[in-house]
Image 1: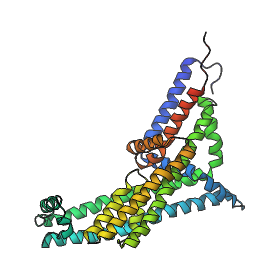
Image 2 (image 1 turned 60 degrees about the vertical axis):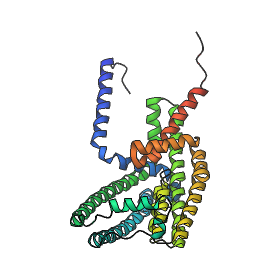
Image 3 (image 1 turned 120 degrees about the vertical axis):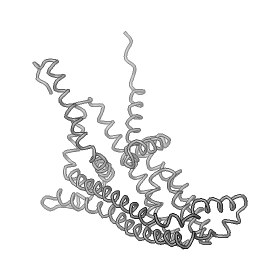
Image 4 (image 1 turned 180 degrees about the vertical axis):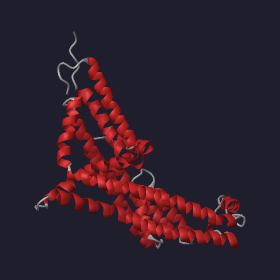
Length: 352
């Protein structure tokens, strides 16, 4: 990297310049770092599928067409549920706003009798309902401005997420297009900086991300599809929407019960107690099988990690990096465990 006649002061100056440029670039791109991380995660997780997809193209400039079509497929898979969910959510929000304004004029709706007749709980629920919902007449005048403000905030958040998704897809296209160069350049640069032992570390990190994508996303999609069928059989409204929301929440450990419990409470408040109990039982069984058998087997087999470290990586990654931390956390834990195993297996230096 440096000529033999370079002085120590010049080396320090060059390393300082390189570090300053890297920090300046990271500061400049800080708003785009989530999209870049998502693109890297998607590229690593789908690389086996993309390799098989690329092999189908035998035409001229097949790398461009393969990258463009595969990125478009991923974009459709990601955007279509968001668009559908957004349309349904807006429709439901409008219905909820009308219901709220109606109750502000006519008084709050009555609670179901079976809920009020529960021992030890019925009176407490009645008191809470009166305290927090009963005084809606005074809130009626402020209901419309609050709804308008809530709609504006939600719209801004949706536009921000959509722009991140679009930039993620653009980045993903270029990653697919240049994946052969990246597969050779990244290990070569890493070996030059940190030595040849880093090659195995990079492989374990990539395997951990790929295993986490398979274990988290595929299992969550399966959970959402199964629960959508359960919602439909139970007579819940918008089963596809609730199933999609359940699948999204299933990516986060212990979060899916919040969705099917809410659907069960909604059905219970409408008098369908049997259907509500059925949803709770079916959701608990599906969640138990997925979280205790299917997901640990997939992630542990690919990442070579005990499930405890996978769980800690997921929870710590979510807290530190947001949703993308679901995949970055286990990758970081795989790197740390790989370093630990390498140090333990390395023979101690000979004594002088």
